[in-house]
Amino acid sequence: MRLHPIGTGPFKFVEFKPNEVIRVAKNPDYWQRGRPYLDGIEWAIVKDTSTRLLSFIAGQADVYFGVTFPQLQDVKREVPDAICDSYLVNGSRNLIVNRAVAPFDSPDLRHAMSLALDRQAFIDIIGQGQGAIGGPMEPPPDGLWGMPAEMLKRLPSYGPDVARRRAEARQIMQKIGYGPDNRLAVTVAARNVPPWRDPALILIDQLREIYVDGELEPVDTTQWYPRLMRKDFKVGLNVTESEVDDPDAQFYENYKCGALRNYTGYCNKPVDELIDRQSREPDAGKRRQLVWQIEKQLIEEDARPDILYVPGVTCRRPYVNGLISMVNSIYNGSRFEDVWLDK
Image (cartoon, rainbow, N blue to C red; front, side):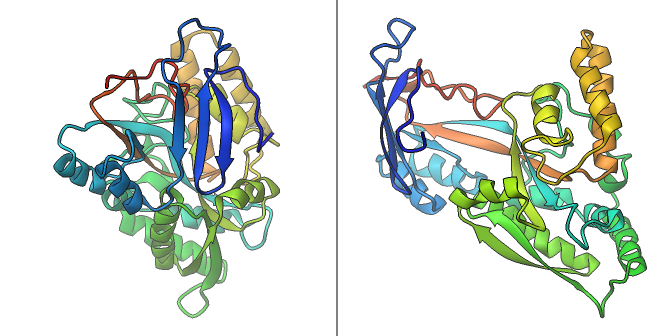
């Protein structure tokens, strides 16, 4: 299935060359008459963001997904007629800790790591000040269900006084046996692409403030998710994408006991009951209150500390029409059945 996928979408698989290209062609038997408009799509796989930028500037690509904010200025300068859409990506950069492996089976150690996070520093460095701090759900106003900022700030690991939080974290670390003369060495795993690798480096730098010396382990994409599924890591930096901004999509997949993408091994049966309860609640206001209650408990128990939500930027040539950047999901709109070229 990985090499010869079969589907019923607007495009049919043609070719996949690892680390080089994916090609798809128009499906003549697609159920929606007259769609898609394109004869095919060629996805060039370019890991290096600088090379990707140069390719778009040189006119070798019609669309550039994943433009970084530093690159956006270059695009506007070199391709002045490019149309660029910015939106908050419904995918959290988060700290993942394997709760079953010593010494990270210690709730105190995990909490100290959460207290050490300076989320605004991540936003300032990665997004040049653009981004959002949130919990498990995409934060408002882009997200419909996320806990308001004023509620987040009242939670222990989200307090605005970073120095005070880190002082508390160092006290915890000393209580469990670590300190300036007995630092904790750890490997921090991250998928070897910039959205994972770059925040992992910042995370390593911040953990040094609480006597944790991290070393980055970049993991190839083909191995990253299998390793997470096997829980073959101690500490890592992950990006949790959600298929849609809805509590069921997020909670059942990532936080329920034994869930497929519950990589940290978090399990709390009363929280599971709350997840089921919010799913059954027909009143949106009452459901939102339950969702906030769940978020609060997940944060207080350091289930999977969320760090930041970054803005995404997609740039396209002016002749590309019908391409819509979605706010509530990184997957919606990716069928490209309505995309057409005016040239």
